[in-house]
Length: 301
Image (tube, rainbow, N blue to C red; front, side, top):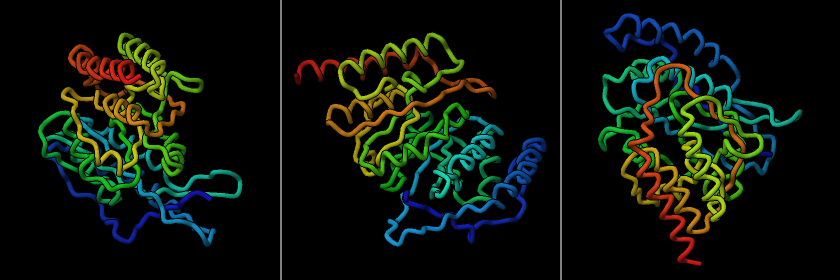
């Protein structure tokens, strides 16, 4: 049987959320969403361990960097609950994963803040987290990595582009000894829907080349990865741009011969809001780690 987690509902505040915004429309949307939250809370979320030798549950740390995602965060929350709260592994087994999501934002006026505070009122697993290292996705991720526990850590985008249904399998791989589990859009079973075509070609080409040099995945630039918490907390982050941090980490893991597991995943472009990903601005930072890995493999061999 898989390790089982539980959800402690004893500390949850079941009151209706107060207004967190001077914008009546934002506050009204946040409060209205609680109807759906109440329905989610009413489901049984705690799985009973029937195995007397069952180990302690693995705690999943979810890092979600956001920038003015607004109401979109509600859809992400629902997807997390659907993916992680008591599902069937087969006809005779169930699981429930112990998780906590750190929603990391740069400033108090971020449009996401009233919604995540409303969510927290109903579910203490949602943790509004103002970051202190400076603005930007890179600092948000560095801050997130510094505050999590030593179990599994996963980076999830706030735009609902990631396929969260793969998380239970990723947890299984971490429990089985993997240092990094990467969701790949470019292997059998993986899909890539929408988005910038140039960005897609760059990601696919980089993955094909780096996989030939033994990086362990066909999709090294994808940020939707799960890490061993103990390992990630031991890493000195050297990235300077932003989302190339995912490439940096898998390069370092591959060069030190850590176990990397690749599973198929589906990525779809956001349907609400606009992407903040700037290909031209970040490309030099990706090239840095691309060349670093190839040079390291050539000269080490």
